Length: 346
Ligand SMILES: NC(=O)c1ccc[n+]([C@@H]2O[C@H](COP(=O)([O-])OP(=O)(O)OC[C@H]3O[C@@H](n4cnc5c(N)ncnc54)[C@H](O)[C@@H]3O)[C@@H](O)[C@H]2O)c1
Image (cartoon, rainbow, N blue to C red):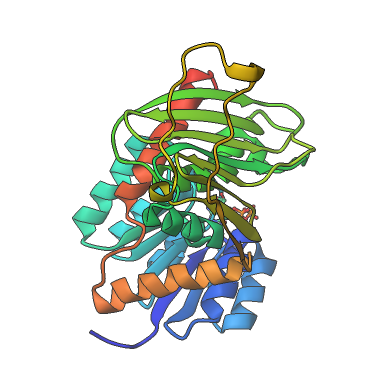
């Protein structure tokens, strides 16, 4: 075991590669960026100047650099698995940006490559560290909401995108690009059993041929109904979380959460009256000792990147369990694939 910084080779210096990974890794003593690959010479020069690292035009050159221990794949989505497998075959550990893969078959190919190489492979599901999600998980585990009935996750905005993320052959689309973060969160809140799935995917206001509006309703055998709305075509946004439970509920945004609940031991039993209600009343004079809690969050994304890479350093240097296993992301890719197939968008 060594405390030496983990030597990173970064493939792809775009919005994610530069603003999330390069910027985040630069803040952490446990990592050192020793190489970067991108076909764009200006981006390579920027990385060379900022990190004193080697710059390569081709990923293959970076993979042949013996100093690189960990490869971060932050390229367009359809290239994630081919580049991930190449990195593992070159004996490197690998972080693959989300969406992990284009299909479950691709996930299995990557898992097999990691097993063959005996190296760590993980996916950059940074929103597993999103403050509202961590708070929701903790509140559900506390039991204050009682038996869960419904978890609705909404990500609404009105944006007419025109980049490669709107094109299916590059792995674009609202579902793999944005909804995948929130689908990943929802699936971690229910057990592993089978899910019934209703999907409505629409291509509405963006360029390209991929969906920019996603509605998924998932019903596990037991547990709450999961309702996901992730859309670039909703001009009247609603709050990011709505959870209904038998003894309370919560709503939350990226910035705050409001929880309301009661202790069922303090409430009287509800008695059934089957006859005509006296005085034409609704018999709903139930008094409940509601309790309230409000939390505020710092929605910053930088913190999520730091937490993700700190966990990974503990795995790579300290042998700790991997926080985001490929297996734990596989179900998310399976739901994306099913939704796309159901709606003819595969
Ligand atoms: N986890 C997150 O929060 C998050 C945020 C943004 C993007 N992403 C993901 O990151 C990936 C990249 O998205 P982006 O928005 O940064 O894209 P982008 O278009 O901004 O950047 C992609 C970069 O990769 C380079 N590139 C393309 N093909 C390459 C190859 N074969 N080898 C090396 N470099 C190559 C391009 O020149 C460009 O610099 C996508 O899969 C996206 O879904 C994740």
